[in-house]
Amino acid sequence: MAEYPKIILKRKKESSLQRFHPWVFSGAIDSKPSQLEEGQIVEVFSKEGIYLATGHFQVGSIMVRIFSFERDEAFWKRKLEKALSWRKEVGLWGNDQTTMFRLVHGEGDGMPGLIIDFYGGVAVVQCHSVGFFLIKDTIASALKQIIGDDLKAVYDKSSHSLPFKAPVDPVDGYLFGETQEWKAMESGHPYRIDVEGGQKTGFFVDQRENRSLLSHYDKGKRVLNTFC
Image 1 (spheres, one colour):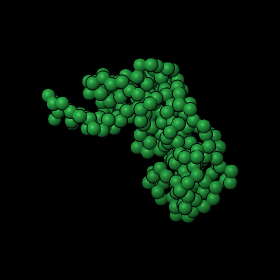
Image 2 (cartoon, helix red, strand yellow):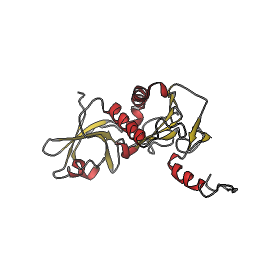
Image 3 (cartoon, one colour):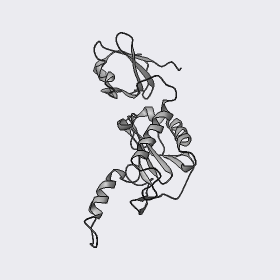
Image 4 (cartoon, helix red, strand yellow):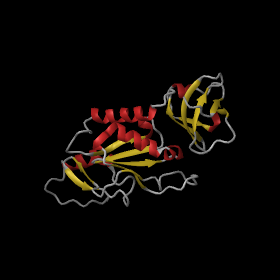
């Protein structure tokens, strides 16, 4: 088990972590090492010395973003497996009518600061914290393990999503594989995804249900998309 720097909370400030809240605010911290760097992995302990969680350190009011409440070296692979299993349960995986969806949604999947959208075999990673940017290759490797041959490529698009003044110099590009076929299906409709030039990861996958709802009202009509 790797040894990580320890952050000690003030007395009676551990209750939020015991409820699995994913943030540690600066005001709750009693002591920390003086030479911590942005994105460094740290462990959080109560004033009584009880282990509480592991996360990424960052400068700001939210000083630690938690990604694990247990000590487990294989948590990245397990977390991604869990995220994928949830998408399987709701019918997003293995659906030839809809081949694009959000695979990882930050805090919702226990990985605050990480977004992964899946487009017909290509995973687009967008890091919103330095911690995840520093381990983006580890995330890509874990994706290859759990998705296997169904994963054609992993593309990092973090250059515009990292915090202002982050101590890194991000350049968007492939972490694994490469493809020119940026195509995916949604509700039986084919889309060409502009990953490199489009907003977010290339497409607003969170509007899937709204587009489906609209289709019930616009049949046979000419519709102006004023939100494109």
